[in-house]
Amino acid sequence: MQESEIDVAGIRLRHRHAGEGPTVLFLHDAAGVSWDPLLGALSTTCRVIAPEHPGFGRGPIPEWMLSSGDVAFFYLDALPALDLREVHLVGHGLGGWIAAEIAIRSTARLASLTLLAPAGVESPDAPFDDIFAWTADEFARRQFHDKRLADEWRQAQARLDIDIVLQNRTALARLAWNPRLNNPQLPYWLHRIDIPTLLVWGEDDQVIPFACHKPYLREIQQAELLALPQTGHALPIERAGEVAARLKSFFQGTKR
Image (cartoon, rainbow, N blue to C red):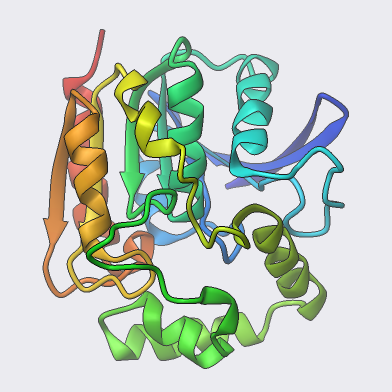
């Protein structure tokens, strides 16, 4: 895995990348960019690019970044800047929300869309809890079905630079404070997504409840669902092998 930076509309976009093959652009969740086991598994047969969202990590929060839709427009500028075409766009949590916002605007450079327990659409059957009120321990516990993995992840998070952790939370608040974790307009435009779409969700997700899959599955014409029992929100870690295998098969089936 290597790290690089490019300029996109005056913003330094830091990204990690590895592998060769079909291009996968992976958009990270609220905790920030990391090279999770899922990315390592995908990079054995794909070219995986994992950027850090504007305002996360050590980058300043851009003045223009007021919503997930703004970040979607940024990534639409990033695709030609990175010279990417026929991209398999994959997003997890917050990154899944941004990926959906990208796809309702333009799929011209996309081959497929994969949403791993995306935020963005709230279900009346399972309203979001207040992620900003959680302690660090609760945030870790809610990520996983497996308590052992939650403990390991919490310990790893505790070793991170506190300035980066606080920066990530500040950037998340800019995008998802009000309303919490969703865009009320997004469900009305999901029908514009005209590429094969795979939804992957843990049935025990305590961050973005499993019931939130229904509007995505109903409104996106070419959508299919992979539901994983005894699985929490941290799909790129908790079910990395199974998710990677399904994604590779899905990518193969979407070749134009």
